[in-house]
Image 1 (cartoon, each protein chain N blue to C red):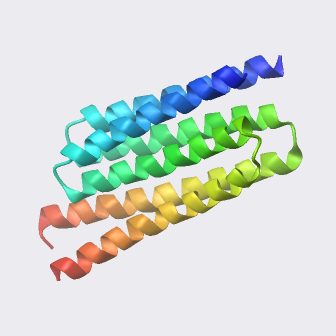
Image 2 (tube, chains in turn blue, orange; image 1 turned 60 degrees about the vertical axis):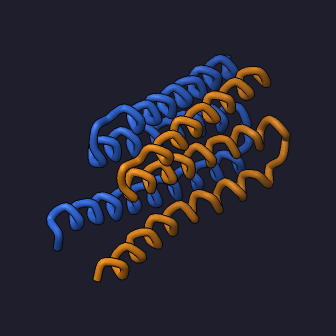
Length: 94
Length: 86
């Protein structure tokens, strides 16, 4: 039962990863690419981690996975903000 | 379960490949930086999958390090651009 649930979570995570990459490749400009990539990727990673945490069934590993996810969320939010601001600055020429 | 994990790792590999295509085409530096962002998150996901697949818990620490360094790359990128344009 747990195996099935964790398989579904992992596959959903990979699906979101692929959706984010396709968005990165197909969308027309930087801001929409940013929108597609950062959200889909972090959701994909979260789902993947939920699946792996269920699979591991070990409290220490689960907490470590949670820590990694929080680090990725913080890093990705910061860098998305920085990249968007940089692009905006270059556009307005200030 | 092993096959599923391997398949997922392959899916992430495909995602990385699509990101590299964006690095190749990307008109601006910001677009390329976004692809680096993707490589960071997909790399973390692949390290996690591999740590379960190969039964190597130490790879979790490597994933944590990669996650922390992803923020540094973006900060360095913007800092470098700023000094470049001033």
